[in-house]
Image 1 (spheres, protein in one colour):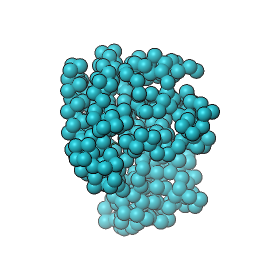
Image 2 (spheres, protein in one colour; image 1 turned 30 degrees about the horizontal axis):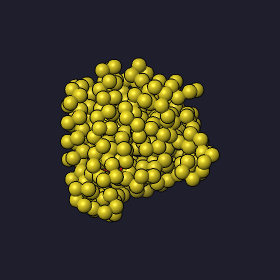
Image 3 (cartoon, protein in one colour; image 1 turned 135 degrees about the horizontal axis):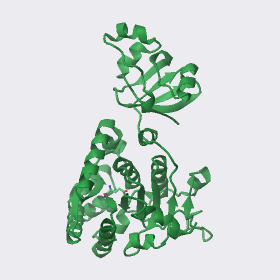
Image 4 (spheres, rainbow, N blue to C red; image 1 turned 30 degrees about the vertical axis):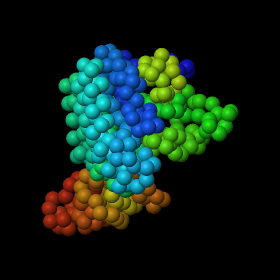
Length: 377
Ligand code: GLU
């Protein structure tokens, strides 16, 4: 399949909602200034797609790089977490100002949305983000997202906007995500080191061979993504039924160029993944583990809920609604939203439903993890 055909998946006719992620090294030049003319060409691309009926969510990096220049920080503001957080606080203002000016010149309204990992991992907050993005798009605004780097500490950061873009795609119910990058796709080997490296135009399955092609680390030193982060994003997107492209962002009007058959790699989404289950499977952090017996493993495989009677061990500190791992006798088999806080789960583990009320002091729920809220991995 040639590039023109694969990029059709991201055209307005096929993709009502599209997430476009822009990396720091494209947006900010070597001196730490915004590449305004290039960005204006991206905004023109966005305006054209909007006019064709496509709703666009932007994920924009560049806050740390822009702030580092203003604060005269070394290593692009990434010498320490404190530097990065300070740089982001200063740079995000500049980043928003540029987006606001360029989008409004194009007749579009910018909405700034700063997110932490927790906002998209916590089920309640995830649903809030989804509803807000939906409302903003319905109102005709262009949401411009970034990680809230100033308050996200290292243990709980996305750390790269590639995965943030894939998660935002899920939350926004997008059909496509385009990662504009300073590389024009996935190569069979690192093209800087291996002259025989070939670009892979389309990936249907993320096999171990494909994953081995990724070469960790950002080429430019400005962003934090690298190919490994892009593949992680592709995995999240694919499991949510979203096509993801890595496209060459080094050219003017990169979205138009990509649509015309420009270079890139398209990761084709799997079919039929239900959004809720996809979201669960892709979550980065789990709060605890429910160890379950072989009978429960068999019941889950038949699509049943997890009952307390099948739980043998409860570990971790979690609350009702948190994600827990489900471990059978042979290891982790799935994930689900806990129906109980950890203490109550421990109080009723191994008990049949008719004797749980006495242990809990209140009427029990139907299941420890409902079938609708669990996924087998
Ligand atoms: N959120 C970071 C910034 O705005 C960029 C993260 C990344 O490089 O992907 O500077």
